[in-house]
Image 1 (cartoon, rainbow, N blue to C red):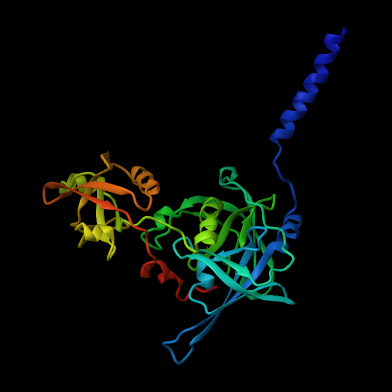
Image 2: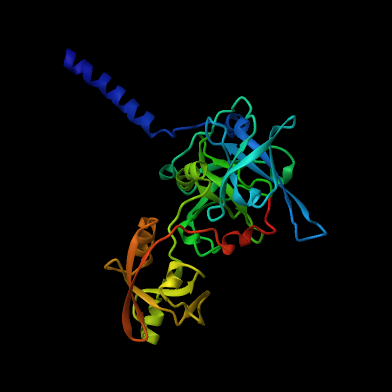
Length: 360
């Protein structure tokens, strides 16, 4: 056997070994080790709210979870845990309680950032995972304080992606990750981590009606919005005030409606109201879905035809505060057009409606 012949098997073994290594899962840690790694950076959040308009039961106590987001001591939790509270406290352990300052809050995404006073000798911030690496069926661990009984872990899998829940008219812009890891009152704001101990979502909602159907805010939304909360105290979004759906094909064929985006409701005081757009007033139920007919049907935005929800998503996500948009819409057999400059969206009453009675 000559040198070239001897070299090839050695090279092949090394190359094959490299391929096998690449195909191995990135992390094979036992969940007990994952918990030990994550737990020091997970904190309990206490909140006290006082209702000045009530005489009975005017003081309410809430408890939730948070985790260290960066090396400056910012803690991420849920907005519904700290919204409208007069006092916030954070506990790293049973003997280490600190008052905390609310840095920023966003009711739409249900994210908030707090910062404990005189932050302790900063526990490590939790590393962020990538949603691109997350697949349905992946094992996950939820860490938090269910019912305030102590730091706990629940194990499950990723059950679904891109879950849109009808909490508000903005919900379609903020889809959730679904998991069957138990999320109980007190878990709100805690991390959902993968087998590497990386945060892939923030736990926000456990199902009261179904079993093992729990929702979390995906890490890509957290990474996009939390820096804004730290810098501005809020998330800056454009405001148009238009809510609706693509005209169902059943209505195109049966009622002769033109294809496009059917305006169902208009937010009071919004740019859409100011330019005179009209929402629907005639409810129609098709299957399990309810539609409001009678409103304008938008057929173009900035010369682009509106034909499906993917187009609506793309146009809406590209909008920025200060942008001027032109829309063409169908009303009473006539195509009309209007232009509007988008202001910053304020927090609206509907954004926090779901928080009442849900402080955990």
